[in-house]
Image: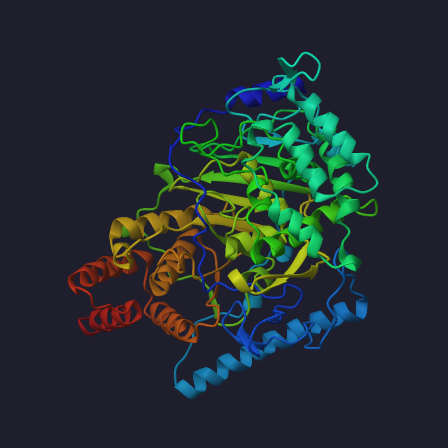
Length: 633
């Protein structure tokens, strides 16, 4: 298989690298909410000053409230590091509650229509296509020129489990440069001769992580000492105060970290055993995918935690990996804050689970970079598709109620955004609850305007509540999603980055609108008729200043072009919900096509530019335009 590997590596082309500053925070909407993932209920945020505070969706919750299960019962928060288990009675209750929720949605929809004297063309959530019900035939797992698989596909297809694929190390610019590569060399000072000596980097790493792994108990200071031994140039530059203080303040009954650090070091040292072939980079301009086992991902992330990856510590614009996100965890360890505390709780819980002898990581995860070629870009002015199915709600979240749909990550073009720094909005929270997503930063180059990343099969390990400064890790999560033919959990996440508008008025340009249409369509475009519908919301409407009405219409048009339904979560924005419902109903009843709506947006942008500082409401503009067109018939 080594020859196959080298063929795959050679066939990956070099990208046109954009040398720009990279690590900005995710553009995710500040109104996007992440609630307690076990039930979708608003979880309280302990320690809040002043009686009541807003949860992630803006709803007021008591600081003293305990978390509630799917049926509304108050439950005790589980101890840190313990997997939550649900018995069949509780599972039945969850399913019953979901059914009741659907019935409630139907009743509320009918009541709203009756009271307003209007009709709705919207669907119910359970009327959209979900992964468990999609008849997707994958066939046998196989690798190709554009699909790199890090497990032995022949053994997997014969039911022999997940065995690392044999191959060879490749120290080339279009592959991940691994710390265990014989080509990875570092200079160390000899303790005897006091002269610089060149050594294989892995030999130095192995020496110090071995010492850590053999300890019965290790401190944060031991972790810092080991990391700086093979990163000596950063001594005095890197801070570990957040990690050190975190370990000290966690209550004794929850503090398992001294036992965990040695197990994490042992996991990191399994790298040569678990990753035996070159890992190609998902480069700009090239559609390609990588499939890894969950165990391989855990090992790569353990190496990221111990900062072993070479050439990945500098942010210089002319550095080799300047167009890639950071992967070593150094930025997470320094600069203590409450945000860092909650991030470390989530990350270390993940490692506590994956290093537990009782844990059996038995699945695969696929990371797919998609590119929308010029020949595939829609001709929006002549698109005849009519409006898609739409479910819209001001309650619930993409991450919980959107389970089984293609879930939109309001991404940064630098995948993961500020997950390893101080960022803590929708994308970062998603990556903390599903830490396997973080490994995408190792090999995914910055997304271009016509690109997206789709991750299939990641596992959720944690619950959370709150958002941004109110975010808290809320305990372990037992992910019981089913798996597909390739042993991937039936969860698909789509990372698409919206434009960042310094001035809100900048977005009312058809050049910008078309860019957003193509970006959304790149992610929404499927490969057949058996793929799930889409769960999204106020994409790019927070710090990136997107207009929620415009972004909703853009995503509606992209979904129509892709022939997929849309579940739209407005995150407690009832006015947006009602406006979108009414606008969708009008467009459906009038038989409005994508091309007609595109023409309306052209007129709207012109009107918005001509209005000066006054804002023109898009939904009103659409309604008036459609009525005027009807009266002229």
